[in-house]
Length: 121
Image (cartoon, rainbow, N blue to C red):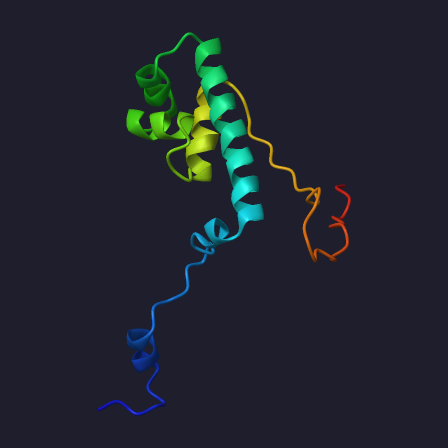
């Protein structure tokens, strides 16, 4: 029997917390709405890039090095896409991905100041 000081006992007795925060955003209506807006924008952008090149989903997926079902799921907002999938689709079409942070327009109880980043040299 392992003692309470045994580090392996803790690992076996409780699951590790996911690094990415799991799917907790689905439990918060404000976060869920924000996520849906982002996914809607992403799916529209990927679809527009694909049409700009006159590609089928299979052609764009091949150019991006991703599975056609993955691209279809991204365009139809079926899954929470990986950043690597988004970047691969954009680069295949000759674009880069830019991610910016901003304060929410409204968020109850949100009192942190704006994020200040150091200037680039």
